[in-house]
Figure (cartoon, rainbow, N blue to C red):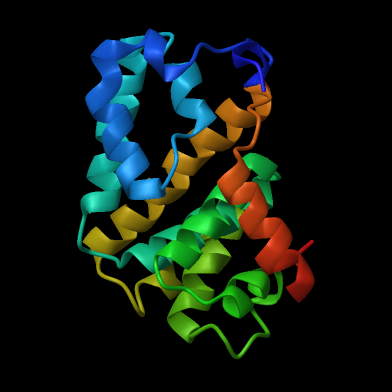
Length: 195
């Protein structure tokens, strides 16, 4: 793959952004690879730094476990239609300890016995918020309050909002999917009926 094929815009390799090496290493350690989206954002280093700080703040919060955060991200990405983020978040959910059968069953979560009532409630919000126009209602929040505190709800909406940005960024830029998340979807989820 040529460097210019990473997005519609064309992107340089990480070697072109030595000042961002610490961010790249941190992301690679966390995800197992460097997302092409980060390389595109690196064209404006201040943008990547701000995004990285926001993402770290959201994912380092202990209010909600990382597996639930990845399911929220996957649900909102499925709803918005971003294939790039769907592959990333399904792979990240598995890395966070969510089994492949549960991930593959997310499109039928409301009927699935693999999801708790609390998870179903949070996925209702993730799927509703990923649609255009946004379809969340006061009832969604009343249901969330049965299982989650106000600070947990802020974390839920923070994950949804972060992935709203990423869904638009990657779909608009035409970000090329990396091998690791693509192989995860192809080898582990498609045999389980993943769409």
